[in-house]
Image (cartoon, rainbow, N blue to C red):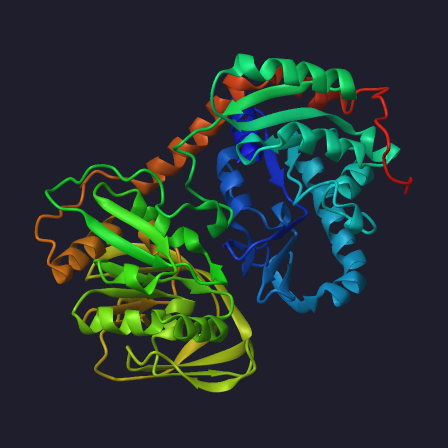
Amino acid sequence: MLTAGICRWLHRQGVKVAPFKAQNMSNNSAVVLGPDGRGGEIGRAQAMQAAACGIAPDLRFNPVLLKPGSDLSSQVVLLGEAVDTITADTFRSLRPRLAETAYAALAELREAYDVVICEGAGSPAEINLRDGDYVNMGLARQARLPTIVVGDIDRGGVFAAMFGTLALLNPADQALLAGFVVNKFRGDRGLLAPGLEMLRQLTGRPTYGVLPWALDLWLDAEDSLAYGRVLGRPAAPHGTEWLDVAVIRLPRISNATDVEALATEPGVRVRLTVEPAELAAADLVVLPGSKSTVADLTWLRETGLADAVAAHAAAGRPLLGICGGFQMLARAIHDPVESGQGSVPGLGLLPIEITFDPRKTVRPSVGSAAGDLPVRGYEIHHGYVSAADPELSPLLHEVGGAVEGAIHGVVHGTHWHGTFESDEFRRWFLTRVARLAGRTGFRVAPGNSFAAAREGTLDLLGDLVEEHLDTTALWRLIESGPPADLPFVPPGVPPR
């Protein structure tokens, strides 16, 4: 979020700026068209940062994307294309290739843009991972980047974290670390001042600013762990009744941002849950995307959530499945690819069958719903509908005439992500849900715009940077690089 804020600040100054994250680990991805016209994936955070720069997303903004499929393995997406599935052991042998690709992507961006703002990943003080690192200090060393450590004070222990991060770096890495930023501060800034001065005396480095906690920063979260139980700050209803949406927080949830657009609607309360009892009171239950459809379907059954989902639909209350969640609603799933389990029964709430293909569908999607309502979205999946009841009604129509998704009574499903960012479709769908759920007093707000909400978030990030960071000092770092003669803080780690 801070990277996006700095990007928006620079964009406002007329600077041609781009974001960069050498490696992201997230199942929240965005589809980007590559130079050959084919769709590829980058971290959704980098797509959001590109919007802050006022530019289209580029595969080079996130050259390496790791998409966890389990606690021990991840799919590797290199410059947008899935190339391998790796474990911690096999990742070591692949890392030189990934580093070379990341370094080349950054070099190209630095030629094409005035400024590139690089986001790290995890912590630069993960000394167990320093060998072969190309994301944090390894990247900074290779490209000689001035570096700022950002501390999340809301989690506590921020002074120890920032000092300890610096003190665990070797001398060459420390020579690039120019200072600190404190993030998510609540309260009287004066109470923090003595600690910031002591940190400067101990490290010889300034704190470039203290960013306040901002309640309205929740759109385009990096992953579902950034969410609380309720998304955003639900506005009062436009009509007389609220609409309650329960989203199941799957263990391997992907593209959880699909439901954020619903949460921008006045009178719509969107909450994530893992409790079967919480589905009973919901007007709409959403099964979101999953990186591991069969594994998460097994989890649904083990936790009792599968029974709660079926009971919700049997009671005549609307249900929606998106991508992996859509696949779970099928009668059967044939998966020799992702899980390797072959044929397994689905929830049986849609009269379809799903088959997984080794080739991954990654593309933007354009179509319509309910006759002529425009809908845009994107697809990222291995599974496809291989059999369907011929009487089944589609949810969407793709440009060109192909049907997409399904409506079967109160059960809805689609492979398309991002559809609720299309305002007219979102309003139609919520109106339909309210009718099916018996919420006759619910009304959509006709002028509500998701695009405007996203721009408002990016502008707020830019405002926070301009108001609370020492932007003059940031300019010096951008123009001149790391300050000379930054002191070494012991003990450090052995030089590399």
